Length: 278
Image (cartoon, rainbow, N blue to C red):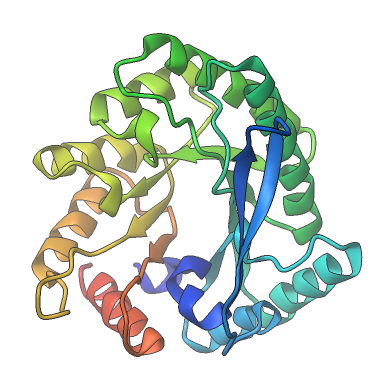
C-alpha cells in the first residue's frame, strides 16, 4: 500500500542541498525579509526530482526556503525537472507566516507573502501549499479565530488557481491536539492538514494521529531517534498503523530524516519501515 504512496520532503536532504533562504519578520521594515544560510551543495534542487524518482518515491514535498530563486526561467526549469522525473509535486511547504498574529500589519503582510507563494506553487504544478496556522500561544482563542479567517481567505485564493491550501500540526498555535482540532474546525471542512508524527506531545500522540488521519493531506513520518543514533522502529510502525486504521491510506506518506550521517541511507531505513508496516 505505502510503496505507491511514498513521498520525500526536501527537508530530509537539506544537508545535501546546501544554502537555505529562510524568511523572517523584519520588525523595523514591517515586512518579511530573507535570511540566507550559506552551505555547500552536494545536490542541486533541479536534480532532486530525478534523485527522488530513482529512489522509488512517487511524491515530492518542497520547502519554500530551498528554492534558490523565484525567477520565472528557474521555476520553469524546476517544473520541467519534476515532470520529466515522473514524480508529483504534492506540496510546497511554506515555512513562514503568523496568521494568528494580533498585529494586523504583520498578518496582512504574511497573507500577501503566502499568496505570492501560492502563485509560485501554481507555476511549479504543485497540488497544494502548506500554510503555518500560527505562532501565538495555545491559550489564545482569539488567535485561533484570526488564523481560521486567514486560512479561509487563502483557501479561496488558492482554489481560484487550482492550488489547495492545507495546514499542519506545526508551530505554537497547533502544538496541542485540542488547539489543532479547534483551528481545523474553525477553518471549515474544506481545509485539510498534514499530520506530522514529530510535532505531537508524547502523551497524546496516538489520539492526535487518529484525529488527523481522516483529514490528512499527507503524513510526515518523523521517527523518534535513540541515543545511539538509531530510531525507534516499533514506534514508527505503530504510528503508521494508527494512521492507516483511521483512514489515511490515500494520503502520501513523507519520509522525514534529520540526522547526521549518510542521508540517503537514513532515508531508506525509514522508508523500509513504512513499507513493511502494511
